[in-house]
Image 1: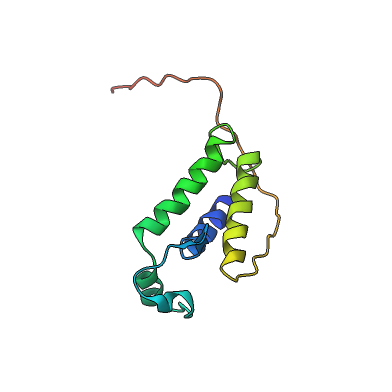
Image 2: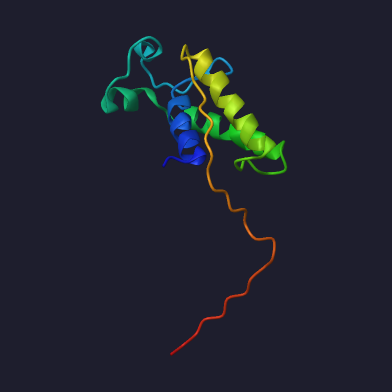
Length: 119
């Protein structure tokens, strides 16, 4: 079963090739703006580190504005989804969101000390 975090990761991979405030994550060729990147090689030609970093910075800003987190079930997650949907729509995609139930176990709020055991 796919988790929301996996779906968000997959969406980020697509968003890495889409626009962010009018600037592209694309590489040197203008053909990246209009061509279908239907192979791994074509896609990789159009992704730049700078473009990926812009999306990472935008998502970090979302986390910073939401108590430092984008965890599923939080306002940070919702804002992350909104950012990705907006990015995809700006690039001409029509994203669809599908809700589903999943088991979520939040991290423990108690500190646990683990001491090594030697036999």
